[in-house]
Image 1 (spheres, one colour):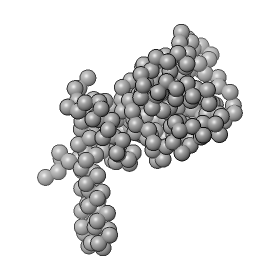
Image 2 (cartoon, rainbow, N blue to C red):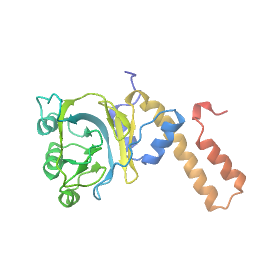
Image 3 (cartoon, rainbow, N blue to C red):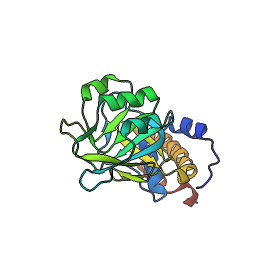
Image 4 (cartoon, rainbow, N blue to C red):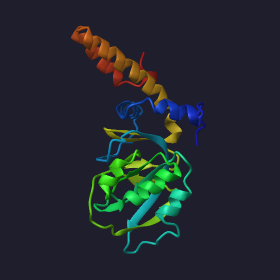
Length: 224
């Protein structure tokens, strides 16, 4: 694992000020992929930043059920971590109000799942970020099979300890080994965004705006 020049506290503080779009743009510059498809906040608590604790599910048929369950997994998760549930994009609920409350009282930073959820009205009343692909009353046909393993959640690979940034636009995963490089690109992208807003507000020539758009796509270290 590559050692970061930032402390974890510094990284998380920086990411709390970043929009998911800037993270996506930084990943694209670096040739990385980390965005989830269709995973959105269930309620008004639509901002989530933290490191991943992964949980893997599999179909009941033929699966070796883990000795742990979701509640014991939550109890053993450090405060502030994000619970990431890989269900194989199950079109059933795998979490509801009880799981959300267990995570909330444990002090976790939120839950991200590629499944659906139930008890949506109750979860929306909580000041706790829960991101899923939607809502359903259909019961699950999957079981928890492992924790703390690399997973794929809604198209994004997530390893234990990876960084997540999520907002109303969706969830983006930053591989922990690339966090320093991503933060460098984010800072550059944010400055170019400010320059573009200023150019638009001042009705700058189109050539200026087009040059800013071009520069936004090029990795900072790759520009002259």
